[in-house]
Length: 508
Image (cartoon, rainbow, N blue to C red; front, side, top):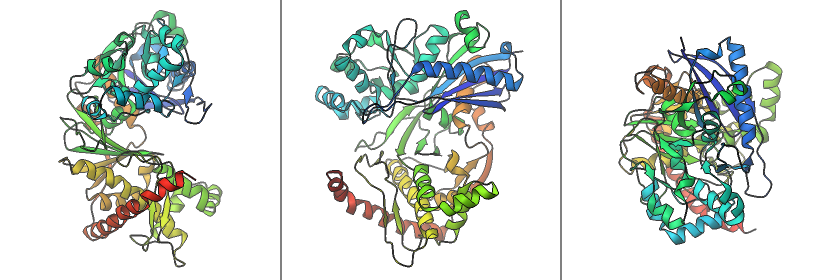
């Protein structure tokens, strides 16, 4: 019986292949890394052939270490990095390297787009701001600077969609990834004629849009040996990594929210309607679950700020942790516990790489504010944890001010392992924080659920609630919350005071 789901997550640093059985249990996973090219300032490219090699290598290794036969795979399904630009030919082979989400070269194209169609209209149609981060401006950059490649391109795809094309010969995407192109009508679930006409883009160069649980083809015989899966195995399209994470966190009903804490961090909701911010501060994705959306706000350096703290301030913890064989963050957390709530009046602004939603300020800089001779490293470490949580509250309040009701916050990602940080978040957010048992598998699990629904192994997406057991609940502590409410006011005032300074620093 074919009872295993093979989920691939094409991330920024590599591809993770994960095997789940028909009960949704994790069997095994493998990882194969690949490089990113930064040939010029603001450029970020990857070779799609590296993706294909990674998918093939991880599939074969995963089946080998799991002792699973290739004919036992019920389906292959994908999640992946979003907002890319992968020009491919009619065989699905790349014509040039992929321009990935982190690439910012197309600033001029984004500016030109704003002259052709109102940014407010684009936001209302797509649920996203006009930005060089999205696919549309990247496609326009190819058209402007590499017209031969643009004309030769059969379809512009995303990372996962390019692998699906290689596997099946079909050029498709799903609603969540379509949303990362600045070309998708979010509520009508189709490419926007108004935007395409305004930009003079050929809709024939875009893939066909599907539900995330749709079977979009089968593994072709000519590639079955390369990937190591039986020809004819169903391929389910899956979704973008953010929307897959929402499903894998069990956030599949209105009123639910989750917080991913990795190098970056974001808060995502499940809603029946998009949340359009009057100031265009937050953005909206299509959920994997039909008729749901995931309004989202993202900060640039969450775990990245704590990693910086480890590398620059905590060499003693790193050395000690290496000697006794534990994670240095555990010793850092112990240090942070020695500092009281509010880190004795020390504020940390976590803007080490500028800031995204809802600040949208690339000039923002990190800062410790309030340092005195009495402050210790323990205070500084705690201030970093608190500063990240306070900044995430900015995102949370942007949604709450638009009427969003959030019952509790589910946390996933490597940063969610810290119990101290979980409790700080609960008190800063003012809602209970729920830590799931599986913190780092949410993205692949969400894709696997879409695959299981697609081939009938799971009845529907409500299975996500059964497959996301809760490990701990961190309840709001009223006195601590009251203290953080006052600190939050200072945090916001500090950012506002420094905002003009950031612009001055950017000119130095």
